[in-house]
Image (cartoon, rainbow, N blue to C red):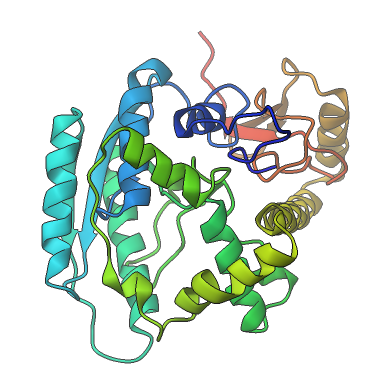
Amino acid sequence: MTAGETTGKRSRPASLATIVRRAMTGAGECALPPGTPILVAVSGGPDSMALLDVLARLGPGLGLEVLAHGVDHGLRPEAARELDLAEKFATSVGVRFDRTRVTVPRGGNLQARARELRWSALASVARGRGAAIATAHHADDRAETLLMRLLRGAGTRGLGVLPPRAEAPVTTAAPPSPGVTVVRPLLRARRADVLLHVERHAVPFASDPSNEDPRYLRTSVRQAVLPLLEKLDPHIVRHLETLADELVNAELRGKSQAWASSLPRPTQEALTRLMASGSHDARVWLPGGLVVSVDPRARRRGTANAPTSIDGSNAARAHIAPEKPSG
């Protein structure tokens, strides 16, 4: 269920801070180790400004170093002023803000190429600081993206969109490099939750006019398709969210099985026993100085933050890390 929805007449929607805290702590699907820098991708719009505000409030208590970064594609003269607004607000809440200016070459599919350059810039900065990236995608964004993929003829592999945790996309704008973790702490919130937060807490934001441009498919999906579906079923966003979760997990199961099948048979059997035991103390050693354990954040609920076990038979997560030197 989307966290911002009510479950009964007396229930009250969770605040945005509560939704983010649930995602970022304990077994939360976006939880990070204490001390991890988290780079908030900020555009100046309401979604990213709300996320920046919430993480600035929660960061110290979560043991996270919060940073903010904006990318100016140079496509709109207003973009620089919007990032100025974001920088001013970040400074006011004690968060360091930096920006990158990129140049999008002329040609078709401008948005896709701008998106690729943005990811490349964010990943480069995050990698240099040992940070994870936090984006402000929420449940409505995820529903819209899934519907857009459907309208463009995507199969099941293309519909597992915007998982709560993933690696930054590999782009052609930069040479291959180690992956950077991306988390989406607002994914269980609705757009209405975000707008309520910025209103209640007087968070400044800018509106991007391109979001209302009818030339873009997302605008039509947001303004016409999704509202029509919500009239037919008020819970459609929750249903699309569940579908995306299930497809993400199916893909993770496939990757897990492919990886396991490449290991020697005795190692596969040891990993199967480890996952079946669920023990957080047991370990299996792999070639190359790696050690596998059961991730203590693994949850019983098979959501996107809890990838399957080595053999794909349960929702425990295998945590793989370099072996710590003894002594």
